[in-house]
Image 1 (cartoon, one colour):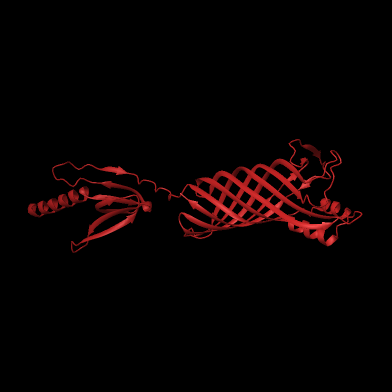
Image 2 (image 1 turned 90 degrees about the vertical axis):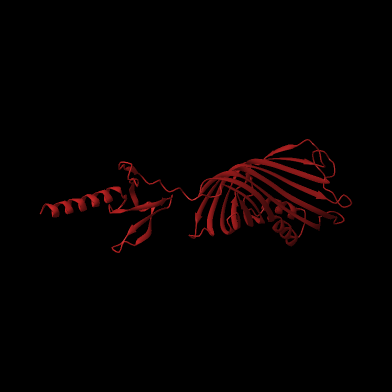
Length: 322
């Protein structure tokens, strides 16, 4: 009887010693896995167990499913010592912080430019020629660049620059004694620059497509240069009584831009976008000069006669990410 009790006590002692020396994993469901932990990484804990046939089986468990784990001593000479660890929080997926973009395309002015149209009609220019001249002037080209620093994967801040130009060349007759001919070329220029905010929404899980919004507030510079052929009829400046070979009109004001983009990423560091934007531009005063004179005449347009050069832009863009 005493012999049986001794055998049972010896077996229990071995089982207790084995269990106490094992490693332990506690899951977030509060299940306990007794095992031998082989390795620990930011994503997985790899461990080994023995089945009923004492065959070693290798397995692993994702770190986000582990509440805690313990490492037991595996040395018979060292007293059992247990250390409890809390899993390290998995780091957010890294992303490229900087994006540098270039874009180019077309623009269209909302304003019909009715005031200058009427001025040309008053000179006796046929309505068809007047409409062609200013309809062409409303169509322009745009180009721009921007650079952003991404604070998160979906939001960034940066700087934006855009450029608009439009020009037209035409010849017409004015109502004079001999119906003189005039050749006129007019060019529009607008430069915009300012700080900008970038927002991005991913449209696919593999981050190949995104919908972006860009909002900017800044400053815009405008110039309108008109050239006349000096060998033909020239208009007279009523203030100086000199023939006008050229006129220059300038303006500047605070403005802003809004752009919506559909972007495709063929590579992680390269993307291609289809862009549509809106640029509100209103001038209530302008500076004019003629024949290259440095002296400018300031013209206050007032609220009713303000010059509205707001436009829409449509473009293709390419961006580099690093």
